Image (tube, rainbow, N blue to C red):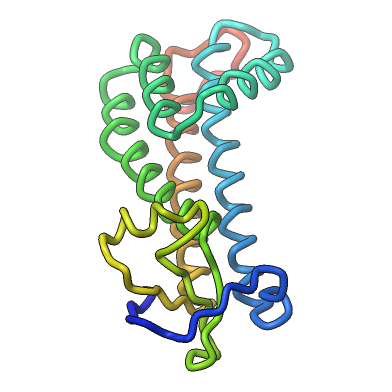
Length: 195
C-alpha cells in the first residue's frame, strides 16, 4: 500500500520520470494495459447480451465499441450492462454481476484512475518511490478520494499490486462470462455443454 507523507520536496517531472523511475512507469503502463483487458471483457458481456440470438458475431464488435465508448463513466456502463442482462439471464447470474462483478470493477476503476491520471513526481528524500501529489491537474480526485493533502509514495510493487488487482477482476469477469455462455438456455448453434 502506498505510504502517506506530509510536505516533501516534490518535483513534478513527467517528461523525465521514464528516465529516473523506469520500473515505476512501466508498472503504470501495466495498470493501463490491464484496464484495457477489463474493458475488453465488458465488451464481451455486452456482445453476449445483445447478440445472444444472432449468429453474426462479427457484427457485435463495432456496435458494442460504439455503445461502450459513448458512455462516459464506468458507473453508467455498469448500469447499462446490468439492464441489458436483467431480462436475459437468470437471477443467480444477475446477482453475481450486481453483487460481485460490478462492485469489484468500481473499486478497480478508482485505483486505475488514481494511477493513470496521477500528478506524478519525485522527491529526493524518497529515491525508491514515485510520488503522487494531491494537488494539480486532472488528479483532483486524489484529494477527494483520500480526503487528505498528504502525498502518496508508491513503490514499484504498490503499482504492480494495482495491476494485479485489476487482473484478478479481469479473471473474475472471465469466469462470469464463461458461466453466462454455458449456463444460459443453450442456443441452437452452440454445442451442448456437459452436465
